Length: 312
Image (tube, rainbow, N blue to C red; front, side):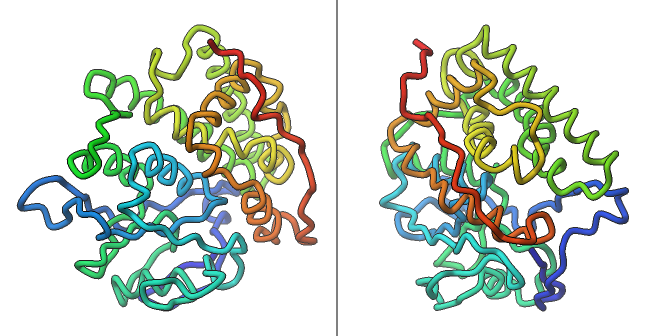
């Protein structure tokens, strides 16, 4: 995984000794905002921004989905990193188009020469000011949702004002227990830390299963941001998290309501094209040598995602 320390790359894994074996995720380092205002330093303009993503990463995946749903594919170009994340962190299979860099950490030091912190995807770059706008996926998601509407004419709203408090509540529940819960389980280095994360993860999935027995989506009858934030973890669960992260109490396929819900979201036009299981499995099983030292990548599982979801 590695990180930058005052602009110098260091190949270091997460420090779990100081946290009793628990995985603790660092906050994003760039938190600027694109706003559709005349005096905003970052304004929505076609062709101005470049998005760096991994097809394996759930945090990056949700920004790709929003880019697709909001009609931004012709306005914000994308570079995909290699699924292999080893001693140099995220790398490019071929030099990226803006600077010819071969490693994502070079993009970070291009923005800030003495940057310290993790080098993560998604990374949203501004070509005009030559810097990173944001590497916080939840905030990129909201920029894509609302700030480019005048440019695209697409006014679909996945964070509507009247539902925001309820969406926020679900996000606050899903993020620590499910989105990050699979990582806290998989990256735990002591038995108590693993079991604590494992129990929290499946208690949360049980709650979602019960809720979806009474509600079509997390928040009522319309797909919201909360659903897409959950979806990118669910779609990886049976292929990666069950085996690689030892999240093996149940599969998503064993939760009938969650399985139908996940399939319905997968079948939304444009979404399945953002899902790449080759990159997903390759990244996790090949890159995490501390968990899978042989780097053998499983051929399965067989996933039934295109059949009818049975949800109306």
